[in-house]
Length: 140
Image (cartoon, rainbow, N blue to C red; front, side, top):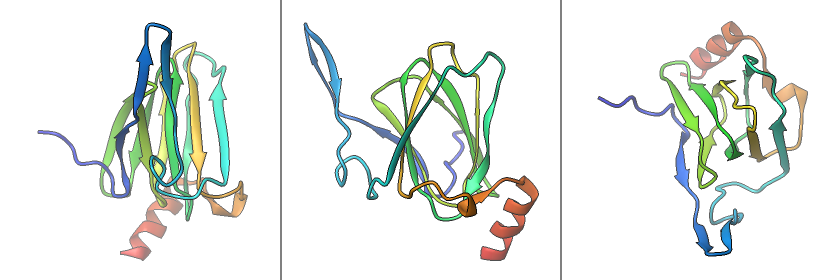
């Protein structure tokens, strides 16, 4: 039995084009990304056995693509928790607002590209899991 994805989250397949010369994937706003892109960043060089994330965003939506290597993204909406292995550059993970995220098992060559719906704003972060659960409960 498969576990449902947390609300507002899910995998998306990106259009892979290629021939004998190699491969190309484009990510286009309004087609592949269901929000206006305000920020793009990437995570790389993560040390062995280091985990990242451990936060949620109040309003931010993200699309994450592991363009090289692999990592595991654990998503939690306060009721459902599911892990997604990102190991293909043609697979993107949509992460809605009010989702706790943790990133684990980074391969040495991992490059995780993230497209975000908002500019960086520390006030949008929830960095304590108990506070996150309280805020989710208040929304229900």
